[in-house]
Image (cartoon, rainbow, N blue to C red; front, top):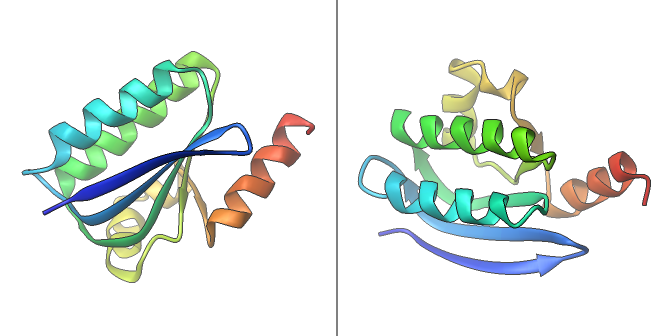
Length: 116
């Protein structure tokens, strides 16, 4: 099972996931991410409670990141756990996606990049 909560913090949309981002849940995650990106605000994904990420989850993140760039906003990942981080590293997506150690770091990075 995968659940999420959505909040706005410092002008960014923060989605906190709890569960696995896998084939079963990727369509739901994709829909949610694209809806948030369409709002024209930076999106921060709190992955502190994500235990597993598979190829469909990776595909969803890449698509959302590409769409965010097209809309002029940024997608950030925060607090990515050991197993999902390893999957991202093996896929070399740690070099493509913006990944932060904490939600606070992601929010601070946004301020730095936006000049705020």
